[in-house]
Image (cartoon, rainbow, N blue to C red; front, side, top):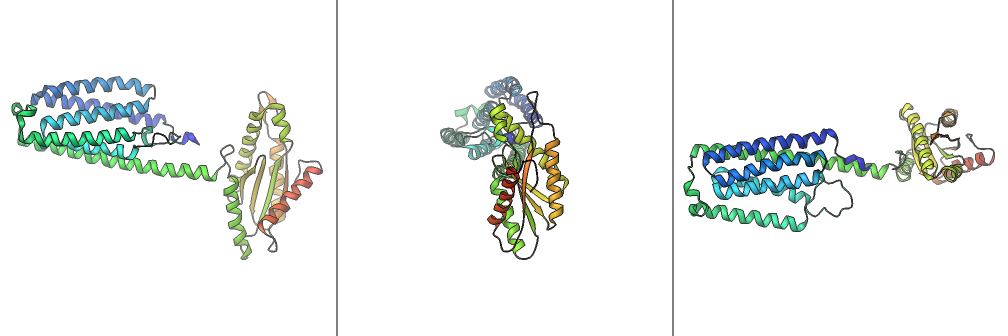
Length: 362
């Protein structure tokens, strides 16, 4: 299940695209600051280009966390310097506000024990406080500079109102697009996180079938409906024969292999039945089948088909062909019985099958 949030080649291509865009952006800014004769920022932009060229090595090695933080801090420094030197008229300070958004969403998630965070990156509380405080200081310095232009050397910059408006509009547009993209991406991430948690809650991690809690919930729902006269059902308990011998003889990895292979066969049959049955792992090497219907013969034939498919299947592990069979006990819904009694009936049938030779449906 943990692979749900691993970066794929497709998602990695987004990082490469963003990196190219940042190089192009810094080149454009470099030209802009050369024209404006702000040579300090020319140096900043040149350094930024070098950083992003170097960052390709981080991406090639899938060091996404380092890339994300380096990118964040470089953009923040560049925006802060531009805002202090150029003033608020050009809108560079807007990037500082926008850059606090990912900090707010990712702060204090460093010790969650898993790696499913957005962009696989987190900021500590100290980093968050530092960035907020630094942004406020930059804001004050920028505003201070509007009254004391010489403080930042702004008196030597040849300002143009049309250029200011164009750059301000460009910065505003970029920030709006950035915020929209980030929030929409975060919404997708939240949906995937919820789906991930649902998978963890409902499915058995080893076999991929429903876990005991989920299959029990489905059973209780169907039992309540059947008590009201609708949707009669049948229950079967399946137990892999001599499973302990497989574990003792070949190791627990072989046992896990058998469980996954067994579950895969059962799941394939469930899918072919198109909603007629539901399967889940009941515990250990036991599995439960819920059958929708009241025809016992049909249910028996379906279980017999499962038994034969398991017996005829190839279970090859480490060049060894494992002999795998299953014994199945079945029981039908009865209004005068509780759900636990119905399950116990199926379990008793299973026990009878084990005592009378195994590899059969009872």
